Image (cartoon, rainbow, N blue to C red; front, side, top):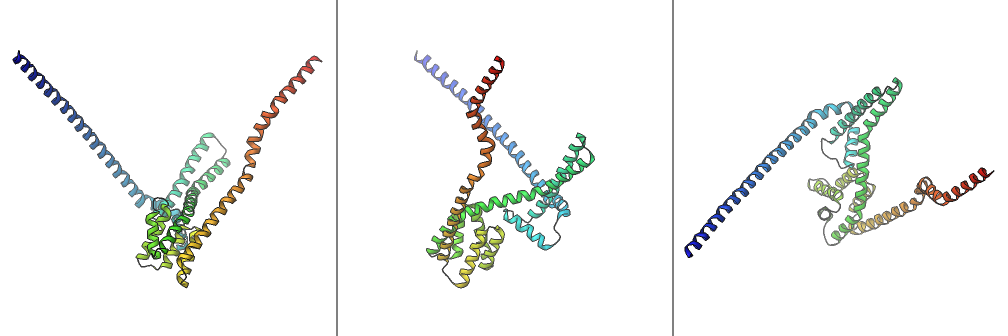
Amino acid sequence: MSVIIGIGILIAISFGLITYSFITTRANQRELVSRRLKGINGTQQDKKKQQNAATAKWFKEKAAPILAKPVKPKSASDQSNLKIKLANAGLRKESAPVIFLASKTICGLGLFLLTLIASMSSGHPAKQIFGMVAFAAGFGFMLPDLWIYLAAKARAEKINHGLPDCLDLMVVSVEAGLGLDAALLRVSNEMGKVHPELAEEFMLVNMEIQMGLSRAEALTNLAIRTGVPSLKSLSAMLIQAEKFGTSIAKALRTHADTLRVKRRQEAEERAAKTAVKLILPLILFIFPAIFIVLAGPAVMKLWDVLTSGILTQ
C-alpha cells in the first residue's frame, strides 16, 4: 500500500513538473513574442522618426529657402526686425525666419487654390471669383503674422505674470551676498518649472555675460529679445544702477513693488471694464429671456381674452 502511495506521489510530482514546464515555456514564448513585437514597433518608430527627420531636414534646407525667396525682406534692417519679431514669440533658431517666410507663401498659395477651386465649382461670376481669391490669398499670407502676434502676446503675458516673483527671489539673493550674475543664475535655476520663459531669458543673459559681453549689452539684448515693457524698464534700471553705483538690491525691491502695484492696478482696471463689457450680452441674450419669462404669460392671457371677445361678438 505504501508503495502504491509512493508511486502516486511520484506520478503527481512528475505531472506537476511537466505542467509547470509547459507553462514556463508558454510564458517564455509570450515574452519572446512581446519582445519581438516591441522590437518591430521600436524599429518602425525609429524608421518613422528617421523619415520625419529627413523630411524636416529636406524642407528646412531645400524647400523652405525656395518658398521664402519671393517674400524675403530685401534690406538688412527689415531682416533684423523680422528676427526680433520671431524672438519676441520665442523662436530664436537660425532657420526660424526662413520657415516663417515659407509658411507665409504656403498659406497664401494654399488658400488661393482652395478658394479658386471652390468658387469656380460653385459657378460664381468672374468678378466675385477674383475678389474672393484675392481676399483668401491675402488672408493666408497674413495668417502666420497673426499667429506670431498672438504667440508673442501670450509669451509677454507669461513673462509679466512671473516677473514680480522672480524679482523677489533676485532681491533675496542679492541681499544674501550674491552678485547680480549669480542672482540671475539662481533665479533661472529655481524658477525654471514655474516660469520657464522668464527663467530661459535670464539664463541667456547669464550665458551672454559668460561669453564676454558686458552686463549692459546683455541686458539690452534681453529687452530687445523679449519686447516686454516691464523687462525693458528692468534692464534700463539695472544699467543705470550699475552705471551710477547705487544699491542694486534697493533698486530691485523698488522695481518689484512698482510692478506689483501696476499689476494690481491692471487687475482693478479689468474688473472695472467688466460692467461695460456685460452690457451687450445682457441686451442680446439675458434681457430677452427675462422679458419672455415675465411678460409671456400675461401676453398669452391677454391674447386669449381678446380672441374670446372677438369670437363672442
